[in-house]
Image (cartoon, rainbow, N blue to C red):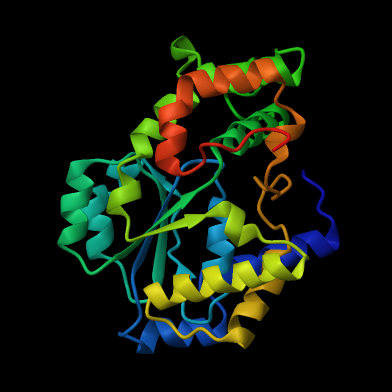
Length: 280
């Protein structure tokens, strides 16, 4: 039986009630409000999905539908994207790691659903992937990543992939999601949303939240955004590692950075992360 730290366990349970709309104020919303947005949140795994979820679910008018994160493997279990969107209620959020498809784009046109696409510097994505798989002993890829003797080996594995074990390269992953850059209603960058203690970073966070909630036609003022920013600092996700930006610079050797850029240079430009190098 897993032992829980009392405070940590309570915070996680409290957060579950909050994000799934099970506390009294949001239960009222679920029954009464019909003017709230329905929101589909797309993200690449390890790009800050839980940070985006927290920012949205801390808003009084939004809650996550009681579903796991939808992906290409489980979506048919729920009747496909069209069925999921048809059954959405006002104020609901669905989170998904869905590769872009023209079919998805057509389905979205037929429903009044706002779409967000969460992205992050792909170098931090592969670092987060390595850390997560190294310490998640129940994950099927844990043993393969743990078999590498050092971080450089794990980073090379995440960058290049291993097709025989169904480990995609980072370039393959970026290509499969690239269409959302133009088809999602709003692109949200992890680096801006994570912010920091410095005043200019917190100001940037506030601006991003204003933009996000204005896009969703929801109320947003300094008090609402500052309360959400304060709540973002509490890590409650089992996949949360450090929640910092630019950590790849501490682990990418010149060899690793060259390998990464050789395979992703064009994609880095598409995602808006070209020209950022270690030490710059």
